[in-house]
Image (cartoon, rainbow, N blue to C red; front, side, top):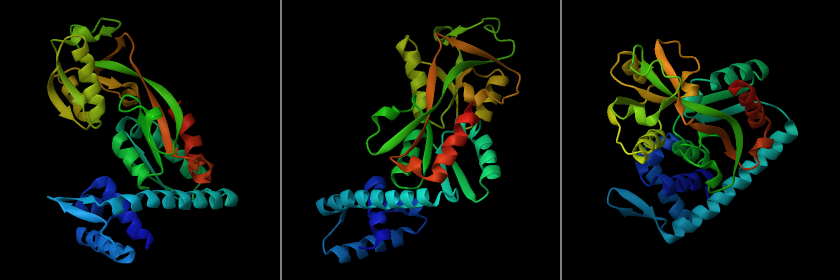
Length: 296
């Protein structure tokens, strides 16, 4: 069985449409169909069946994906063993990070790694934790940086390792001259009559904020949704909205906003997630070692 065709089937089991697989693998939808058809010829049994606009795997297809998972795991373990023996920090590495991490400490880590390991080619992509973990499962990413507001890393299904990086506090953002500007800390209930702007780069994060409001008896009125910190900052600065943002997103912010801690204090933990055992790989170990001082 062709290795790339197995990978194509494995992606199809997770993404369910030919177009999504094509985007993940960088090929056309017709090429995806061709790879699956050729794999079916190789094994002599149908592996997928069409359901409306999508496709679903047959029992044979699902069974083959289980074997493919093990095959890919063994291949990655072999590559890690060889890299460990070579003890060379080189090659390509892909890191998926949620925006607050991507805009704060990861650039510093990348700069340090470029100085220390010039043969390491590191590429960062911003994505939410769920998409990041999916990329990790499908070998589209080597390291994921995510928080535990969006998901609980200790409940990850599959062979993963987690490294704690930091604890990040959440803050209230107010425009200058706001009625609560003189308050040392702000309770969530004091914001019930405000208009809110929320960062939706991670939908789970914005849903967690809205749920926290519901838990104390009110539904926040949202007048701004954006996947850009700058847009949220602009809405608050103009006096249109207030917001709740993680400290990492504010670390290098020099705008004229009022920043206040929530009471009681709310925190999230930031983790680096890798496939199990790949921390032995010198290039992955080097990146993990660079992330810890960068986040400090």
